[in-house]
Length: 59
Image 1 (tube, rainbow, N blue to C red):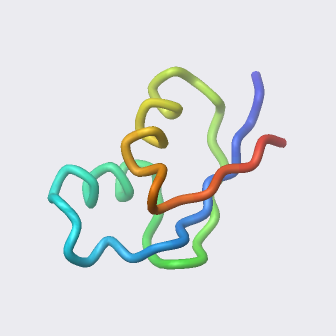
Image 2 (cartoon, rainbow, N blue to C red):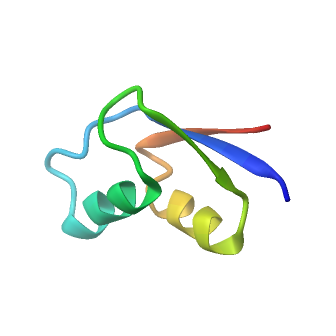
């Protein structure tokens, strides 16, 4: 299965609670933190919700 790297670029401060929870569910804790996930529909949907806070790279 394809892997996708997710990097947090912007802060979660002053963001709605559901976006904060989505970042936490993705495993992101602070700006610059990078995590790697399988590119499943669930993960891609979470990334779509916070795409303005993160960057992605396929690997």
